[in-house]
Image: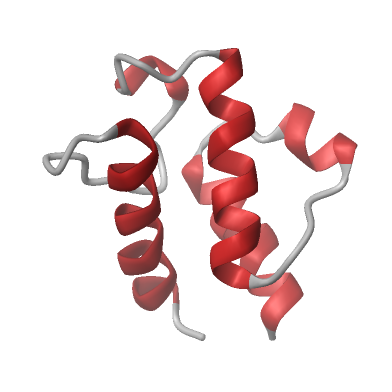
Length: 80
């Protein structure tokens, strides 16, 4: 799957989780960029991303991801 396809799907997940149709994520997007992205919403987001792509993040990945770009790389490594 191409990065562009992953970003398209992630945009939909982020919009659903945060109930904001204006969200447009990119490789540098972090929790500081999205108003409602707190620790509780982070858990909801991780679960939604896992469901969307049929993968499971391990605890180390969840706690060390610094931005959406890192999330995309993990997703690509799992679905390739």
